[in-house]
Image (cartoon, rainbow over all chains, first blue to last red; front, top):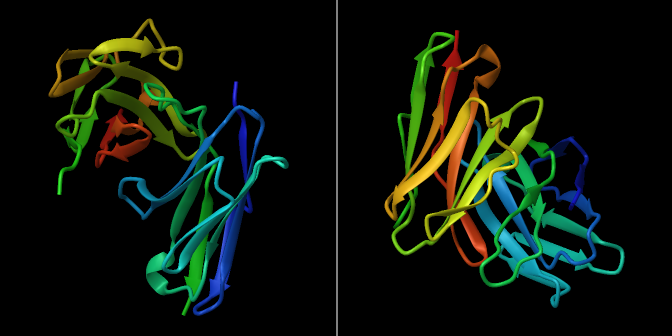
Length: 114
Length: 111
C-alpha cells in the first residue's frame, strides 16, 4: 500500500518569512495530493490539493508543487502570519471516480513566531 | 456552508461500556470515512462506506468495533466493550470525488 512520509515534524518560522513542508510518497500510481491544516482542537481542513497532471498550484499565500518522477510534493506558505500556526498534513491517493481513500503523512507542527 | 456534523463532541466513559458515535455527512456525498487520531499514531483510517455499503474496514479492531450506515444521512461507529486504549479523537469525513471534508470529531476518553 501507499506510504507517505512528511518532514520536518516541527517547524518554527519568524512571522513574515516563508515555510516549506515536504512529503514523499511510495506508490507511483498515486495521482491526487491534498494538504490539510489542523488547528488545535479542531478538524483537519482541506487547504489546497493538486493532481498528478499539474506541477504547481497556488492559492494566495499557499502553493503546492508536485514532482511526480521523484514522488515528492511540497507545501509553501509565504508571508506567514500567526494564524498559520497549526499542524499540516499531506496525503496521497490513487484517486479515480469512486475511490477517495487517502493515506496521510504524520504531520508537521508549524509555529509562527511573532 | 454545508458541513459534516458529529455527535457527541465529547464522551467520557468507563472501561467496558458501550460507546456509539454518530456522523451526518454532507448532503449528496456518497462516501463516508471514519478516522481515529492519537498523538502516537496520527490519523488512522478505520473504515469507509460508499453508497452506504462498507468498502474497507481493515483498520478497525473487529472484535470490538463496528461501523454502519443505516441511511444516507447517518453513519455510526460503535465500540463494545470500550478500553482505555480506545481514548482518541474520532473523525468522520464525507467525500465528493476527490475531496474529503472532516467533521468536528468526537473526543473519547475511556477511564
